[in-house]
Image (cartoon, rainbow, N blue to C red):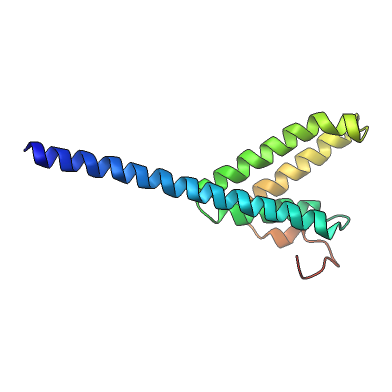
Length: 130
């Protein structure tokens, strides 16, 4: 009976362990998806494409699974919170413009994380490479 209980306990521990490893792997890959979208946005340097890259990064990350969706939310929220402090310092935006842009970014983030097509935000003329 002790052997049976020990086997059940070990399988539960290993099962939980493998779930955590899967979650962490998804989160890591999701963070890479977010970085790729950010890098593509910087490389494209295309006016009006910001929301598309927000949606695409979140979409790609969330498709990895719960860990990817979690990473996308954490990264997106952190970026917007940091930007709230850095924009007034470096860009001089003190009006509601920064808040409006942040809300629009977060809407694009949520759009992508929810599995909706990020091409909804794709601007006309953005090269096919992106």
